Length: 194
Image 1 (cartoon, one colour):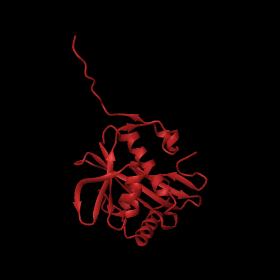
Image 2: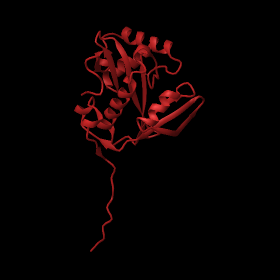
Image 3: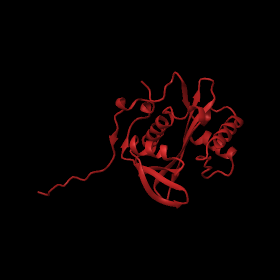
Image 4: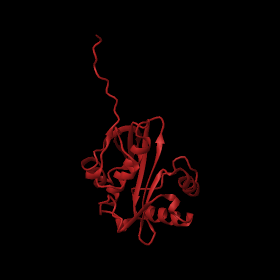
């Protein structure tokens, strides 16, 4: 069984979005239906540049419904000063509160671990507080995230966790019981010289 139900959804990335207008309409709709998310342009100056760069760098996961409409987006960037990966996630209003966001978080985390698990020490995201208390509860109780003091921003809390494992990409969309993760933490053994 898959993590994200392939009978209901198609998992891809921004390369699978046919036009910039589709992406723009998705972002506008999400920004208008929630007070807790806006597209983080990261290093880009415009939505269009973000879209075009996202089609080239694959640092994103897009979930579509069977009509090929975007219903969720997970994206990330490296935060070099923090030696971490910062994620951003949004799910369209009519698909919220059904577990899709939680499953997409797991898939995104696996994507980071599989590709950059040895380079990035942790993964984190910004959460608006107090508006997103239910998301904070999911992050902490289901996904093992905790509050992190990375930066100081009014009305924003940072939640993340350490990355200490690696696995192969073909397991991105597998249920947790089917995934074997390998610990990448280097542990020096105490050896006595003879």
